[in-house]
Length: 219
Image (cartoon, rainbow, N blue to C red; front, side):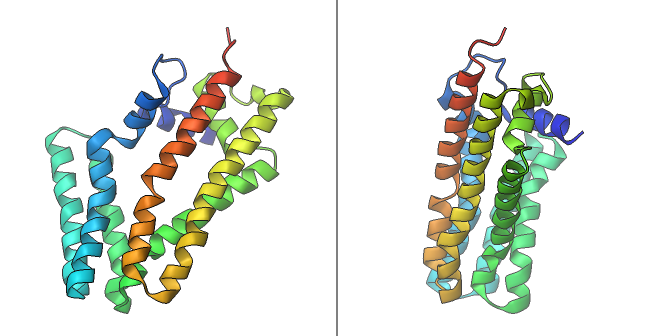
């Protein structure tokens, strides 16, 4: 079931309500610590700096993918699962494909736009149809499946949390698209970094705090 899969993925990422840990520790674990931050930021940052200073698209994309490949090798050496090791590299290669084809540096961000549209829409639609994704994930994390749907307070809370996640993804899209249409690669990349992990961490921490409070008296 999709709920079981989402719950298992959340536990592997470090989101486990049955484990006593601070909110800050949980968020730090989910984003992967300093290595996770570097893997998320460095490839894009190298691309922005290289392209802004040289205007050489091929060189900039090559450096970005090269950094991602280096991180993949490090993960393999540290015995990470192959899927985790190569996920960042695959994402970097896919993102580099379109600008190589079009010759437009700003197209490096199109995959991110599509991701924000898909995730943002999925969270908002799930709340509208009263099957909020946050509820599905939390339900299988705490072992109650979809029984939370019988509790009006939980339904409302999970719906609003799902709306918050949907708003996060669509906010990124709304802020970044104008810079894309202007062809402003430097500003677009900077905004993407700023609206990446920092905003993700804030919404994740808020979701964790609200959910822990919701289940504070769970037997």
